[in-house]
Length: 295
Ligand SMILES: NC(=O)c1ccc[n+]([C@@H]2O[C@H](COP(=O)([O-])OP(=O)(O)OC[C@H]3O[C@@H](n4cnc5c(N)ncnc54)[C@H](OP(=O)(O)O)[C@@H]3O)[C@@H](O)[C@H]2O)c1
Image 1: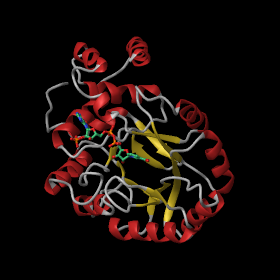
Image 2: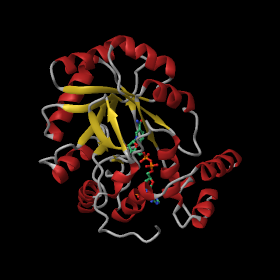
Image 3: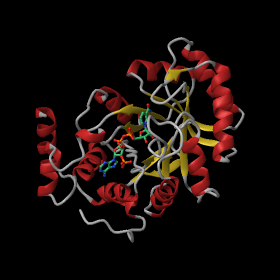
């Protein structure tokens, strides 16, 4: 598994499928496109042509669920997705988000005012060259604006046919329950990985309610990858890489789990997608859980 091949068409499908909102059938291993931007998630990526190659290869490898946001770049990630993949293949689900202003590199300022969300959604539709966004996620619930106003705006956009489904990001169980009294919610995107289990209660709620759980930072960047990490040493015994084990663990953890590892490099994409072929049985799961608790 450590030797990456480029002729592995469709292998992501081995991760199995999930129905988002009961009607969008996606391969459970998706792709996060925050990293196809410049430093600080700002401006152009160092190698735009490589970013285009990564996206096209992701689809060839069987990925049909791509996560992005208007704030990545800002705008750059959505523009590169359209450049690389439009006209989109049937069944490709692009999930985007709105709810942040970006004053500069590494700066993220919540903005859930209805006029901002409306123009953010219109901008995403334009850049992605879509008539309707399959999954539109509120990037954050802005504490300065009533949740009713933020989700009510998305509900209006949905009624106008501009959004198919609505998702949340970085929320508690209490916030999800409240949001669901305003509008149907189909997915939750929270930070979660084998070494970062703060959202365990949210995952359990999503499992119980059959909402998609989209863990961001699934590789916990440096902490998980690398052959010298505890997971790296365990992975070597299983003839896999640390990133592959971290992703396979997520896929095994819950049937509602939709990991979206991000990369700007073809080589890392091939490595990550090969995780779909790695099965984590109950013994390996226990071993990994013990290791993650100890680290
Ligand atoms: N909802 C939110 O608030 C939120 C926040 C952050 C992210 N997200 C979403 O979640 C996605 C994933 O999150 P993330 O990008 O922060 O975390 P991640 O996928 O865990 O890590 C990505 C980082 O790991 C590196 N990497 C990827 N594959 C690797 C491999 N096989 N070996 C070594 N390094 C590897 C990438 O660098 P290279 O480019 O060098 O491969 C990149 O720096 C994002 O793309 C975005 O769509 C959402």
